[in-house]
Length: 312
Ligand SMILES: NC(=O)c1ccc[n+]([C@@H]2O[C@H](COP(=O)([O-])OP(=O)(O)OC[C@H]3O[C@@H](n4cnc5c(N)ncnc54)[C@H](OP(=O)(O)O)[C@@H]3O)[C@@H](O)[C@H]2O)c1
Image (tube, rainbow, N blue to C red; front, side, top):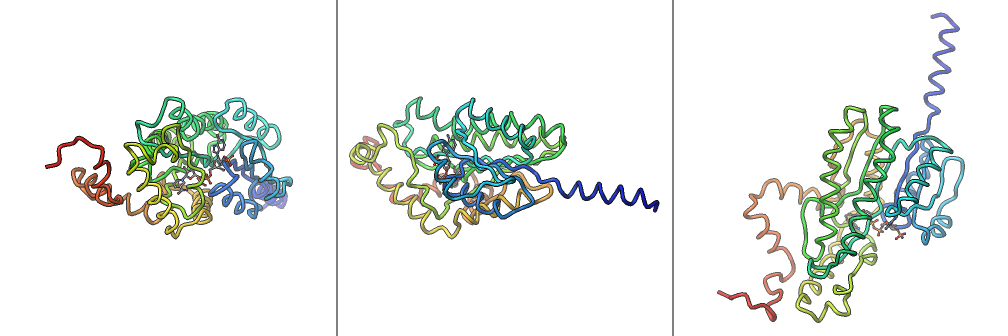
């Protein structure tokens, strides 16, 4: 080969390998986001932006050292100005985001009757509307580049609902539906879409659960729904405690998706997620709910003291 041509190709290859994709992660102050940030800090082949709400920024600054490829920014996913500002700052300094990991999320613990419109809006804004608005900001440059990844941390609650978690389930079902559509819409442009589906994670995240005015343990543990809360809360905490999957394992799954060529849309991230996936597909619908109802702690006795339902 002509030596000038060979030198040209060598330089081009070097330029190509020097490109460090830009990864943006939301909700890095704890749990899965924190674990993913720790993993990504060691991966020198990426430029990484980790984000948290204002109150959690000092924690991130203590836990991570910023440098020319690792950056801490403030982002509240529910705030339009905050979303636009983060994307603008990244684009100005480095360029368009290549990999977006939507991880931030909150979970309300309340039966349907104990939610109010403001609680519902807060749940949906954080777990669905905020992430989708970020997707809308990140997609246009990705389409022009012709490659990239959009990854959302969903949940088993995006395929099955549980009592006292209706709103959380609704938000994750919404995310799952939108991402399934997005998979078709993004594929022709060369963009990969994935949903990470953890079940119970061994972590302290149950302490971050949100209560409403009526589901607050101070009032809810004496009302008509007391059996639901007094059984479901310790059940969820126990399942999380017994889970062999910690946030680091979920983060490793996300890293696997980031690195994988043509990753799947649905990625179960814990063993129970895989089991629930198959149960939902194998069990006929008429047996599915009675089976899950049977698995809930003492569900047959819930509300016995307060119901007027005829006991046959
Ligand atoms: N833990 C589980 O068992 C489990 C199971 C299935 C799915 N998931 C999903 O996994 C993801 C991570 O959860 P996790 O277990 O790591 O829980 P976590 O420890 O509570 O982490 C959630 C993070 O989201 C952040 N966040 C909340 N509202 C935000 C907002 N408006 N803007 C920006 N950040 C916000 C929180 O930051 P602040 O500290 O600033 O509040 C927190 O760092 C969530 O999407 C969750 O739904 C968790």
